[in-house]
Length: 144
Image (cartoon, rainbow, N blue to C red; front, side, top):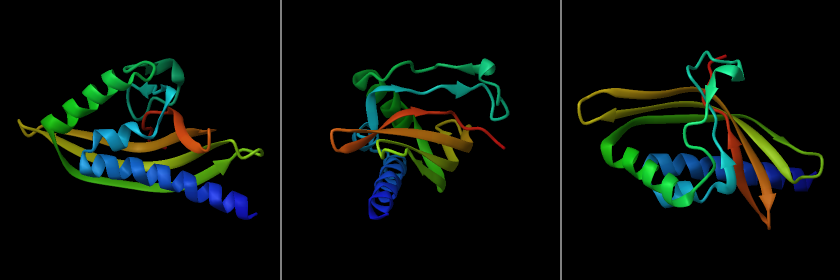
């Protein structure tokens, strides 16, 4: 039982580390959560529950490209708020895989005053690699 509690704490830590990265606009901290095989599909809208409507904007994780993309966001937008709440953490029977269900409400604003809202529920999928957890996949935000 203790091992499962420890894994839950480790998954909560990586979710919270990602949240801190957005809060502080720290691209290195953000990059630290991703597995080299990470992919990030996005629904076209928060109501696009059918994956037939999803797109693959960033492709497979590429450290330099993703770092540049996220730094561009950080450099061109002000973070107005970033509210995230872990709703569930599920751990595989063998303790080597997990996912976290996280409700996200993040508002960015560009220099022209245009808002860019991320709002909905995400499923963040993790794999234990060499003693540490890394995000392997993350669904885009959906409203339920």
